[in-house]
Image (cartoon, rainbow, N blue to C red):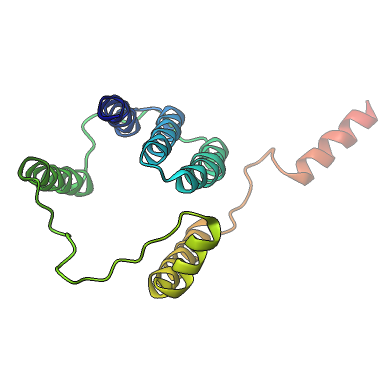
Length: 188
């Protein structure tokens, strides 16, 4: 079991690196699909079969179809100029380095910053859909509602970012030019 987890862990890290390092947006999205499938494999190996199924259906299935659709719809330019990295890239690299150091420390020392304290309550769930739903809507309702508000804020932000001011069409495009071309064709 440990060897299988290590193999799938290496595959997961390799596909996650493919997400970050790929210059083509579609290749990056496909690497993300592979990463999400491999995370589902980790859940299945840990015995969380329901979570693995939800991971495949929701994330690797529905959401990634939307991401690939948006990439195709926008026609993102694959020619990214080299050496164009703003402060966001530098901040992301710094944040990644800090996270790597923290995770390395936790892995080597065997200690966790988020371990349950003595006498802390732990809600055991039987793993069925009904058990997970009952636990989610009773013990974790605040986290569930905060998550729904964050998703709603993301949707509203996406709508505002997607609103585009109307701009005039270039000459030779649009309905009037098509009608004029049809009239010319009819006169010939």
